[in-house]
Every structure is written in structure tokens, then in C-alpha cells.
Amino acid sequence: MSLARNFVLKTSSLKPVESLVKKSFLFRPLVSRFIAGDTLEQAITETEQILSAGPRITLDYLGENAHSESEALASCQMYAQMLDRIDQSDKVRAWRTNHSGTEPMNISIKLTQCGLDQGSDFAEANYRKVVERAVELDNFVRIDMESSDYTERTVDIVTRVHQELPNTGTVLQSYLHRNDDDVDLMIEKRIRTRLVKGAYLEPAAVAYQDKAKVDEQYVAQAKRFLDKGTYPAIATQDEKIILELKKYVESNNIDKSGFEFQMLLGIRRDLQSSLVAEGYNVRIYVPYGDQWYPYFTRRLAERPANAFFILKNLLKK
Ligand SMILES: Cc1cc2nc3c(=O)[nH]c(=O)nc-3n(C[C@H](O)[C@H](O)[C@H](O)COP(=O)(O)OP(=O)(O)OC[C@H]3O[C@@H](n4cnc5c(N)ncnc54)[C@H](O)[C@@H]3O)c2cc1C
Image (cartoon, rainbow, N blue to C red; front, side):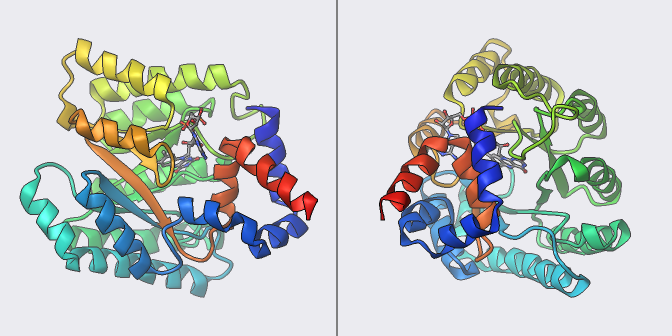
């Protein structure tokens, strides 16, 4: 992990910095590049535009770590509302008619938003209800992976719920030392998994700190998913890695319809379009909601040049 990335993640967690960033108009253009708006309707408008250009969508209602049971229940209500609203979209219906394969617009949710801090059983019951709604609507729910404090519980809960309700999957992070074992488990249980490098500030005891090592792990684990996974999602904006994996797919005659690339809203749109044009399945992760700060700072940390540019301008004022 680069020093600059560490610095951005640590600095942005300071309360005065948070309040400065939230108030400053300088950040607005960047926020709106990464986030589809404050409301579900704004997000639906943006996602329908993306769908018409070819990629699929996964919709994320921003927020993490519910502070109370009632907050968690409200988030889960929003998740159910998202599934209902997606089901009512004419653009989504038209997309389904014209394309084969997996659902055009699914949702990504977080177990801490379902109340994991309030209790594992409570969060699991809330999550299960969301997946039950997805089953009724023939849709899919993915649990995002959060910091390593939650990895074990997330893997356990998803594995348990998936046994009864297969319309769900999760995310694994290549920077974690434990990840090879989790890849084995997801392959064995046939759980749809998104592979990412990992976005949180983690200590050396649990995660590789060296970017080259994380990249190496990522490529090796992505190849294992492409060989044996259940409709894996290769989620990265790293062009070098995408090129290497495309070569792997071609030289091993791997069916393009058996996996998808995933990318974040507002990042490398050129690459998103070229993958669609080459006939790959692509899904864009589209976050919305007014709790955008933690998500936004993780995006800044991935490209500290963005943060330093804005910081310089703030200091000039
Ligand atoms: C669809 C999707 C879902 C994700 N879900 C999770 C999750 O559940 N849990 C989790 O921990 N992490 C998640 N992540 C984030 C992930 O862990 C990485 O932090 C993030 O994808 C950046 O890594 P990278 O693979 O793009 O490679 P990097 O080596 O970080 O970046 C490669 C290149 O991509 C471009 N790029 C990357 N990030 C940015 C940015 N913010 N702004 C501008 N350009 C950028 C740059 O050109 C950069 O050189 C998700 C990522 C994606 C794409």
C-alpha cells in the first residue's frame, strides 16, 4: 500500500477534514463524478442511461455501520425499495428482453448497514429478508466486503444464506493474507464472487502492504475464479491486469458469457466502453445517497493525485 494512499485514508478520517470536505464546493464535481445523486430516483435516471450504452449495473445505497437497530431496519427497507424500483423500470425490462445472461441491474449492500454491529443474528435476518425479496423479483443481492474486522462474519453469513437462497454472493479482497482460502471456499460452494484488490486501511498482520504483491495475488486469484468460479466478477480498473486476464481468457477458451468485468462509476469510462465493444459483460457499480463521505475518501485514496490537487486549492483560499 502506498504511503500516499495511507496518508489520504488517515487524514480524511479526521473530523475537521471531513467537515471541510463536506462543506467545500471544490469537491462537488468529483463527488458527482463518483456518486449518482442523493436519491433513488436520481440514481435510477443515471443507471438507465448507462444501461442503454450496454453495461449492466449494480446499485449501492451509500452508508455503513448502522448506529442502531432502527437505522439498520430503515436501510433494509431502502434495499427492498431499490429492488422494487428496479423491477418497475421499463429500461430494465427492455434490457432483459433484448439480452441473455444475468440480471441487468442488481444491488450491492453492506452487512454493517444491515446491523452487523448490533448483532450477527440481527444482521443475518435483515439480509435474508432482502434476498427473499430479490428471489421474488428474480434479482440478485451482493454483500460488499468491508474492513477485516468483518471478513470472517461476512463469509460465514453469506455462505449460510446462500445455502437456502442462491440469489446472493459476496466480494473477496486480494490484499488479505487469508484470501486464498476464501477463494477455495467460494469456488467449492459455487457462490458468485466479485474479486477486488481491497480498499480499506489494513495492518500488515492481515493484509499485504506491497502493491506489486497485491497485484500478483489478484491476477492469480482471478485466474482461479475464471477457471472454476460461478459467474465471477473481475472488479478492477487496472488496465494492465485486465489485458493479462483477457489474454488468459482467450488462450484458455474461456466463455466470455461465464464472467463479467466490474468497474466503478466515473472511473476509466474509456475502458468500460471498449470492453463492452469487445463483447465482454461489464457491470458498473453505481452508488447513491447522502452518506457519501467514506466511499468518496476511498476513491480519493486510490488516486491521491485527485486529493492533493484539491488540498492545494483549499490551502490557497
Ligand atoms: C465494482 C467494484 C466494486 C468494489 N467493491 C469493493 C468492496 O466490496 N470492498 C472493497 O474493499 N473494495 C471494493 N472495491 C475497490 C477495490 O478494492 C479497489 O480499491 C479499487 O478497485 C481500486 O483498485 P484497482 O483494482 O482499480 O487498481 P489500482 O491499482 O488501485 O488502480 C489501477 C488504475 O485504475 C485507475 N483508478 C483506480 N482507482 C481510481 C480512482 N479512484 N480514481 C481514478 N482512477 C482510478 C487508475 O488509472 C489506476 O492507475 C470495488 C471496486 C470495484 C471496481
